[in-house]
Image (cartoon, rainbow, N blue to C red; front, side):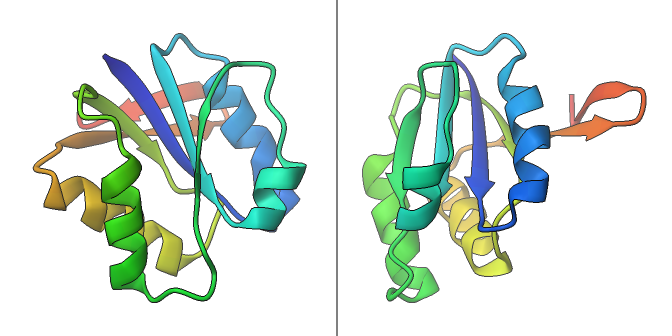
Length: 117
């Protein structure tokens, strides 16, 4: 299942890049962020939201993410342009804790690029 996972932070300047990647062909889109981002970030595509509690430490966030990641995802592409380092570490750690390999996807001047493919 070709899955795109992104973190969303409070800096709206990066949201356009995430939305651009979401417009690619995906079987599943998963977005992680805090309550404010959840209430503010909108997509024209179906997606799963994983809420990150700002009061929790990184290890607690890892547990929360692990508990909400679908087990059937296998072809995973990650973008960390938005969000905080804390959120990024929690996401990457949760993928590694589940023995999930992943590639990265970025918006560049000449279009979308996939790394690790």
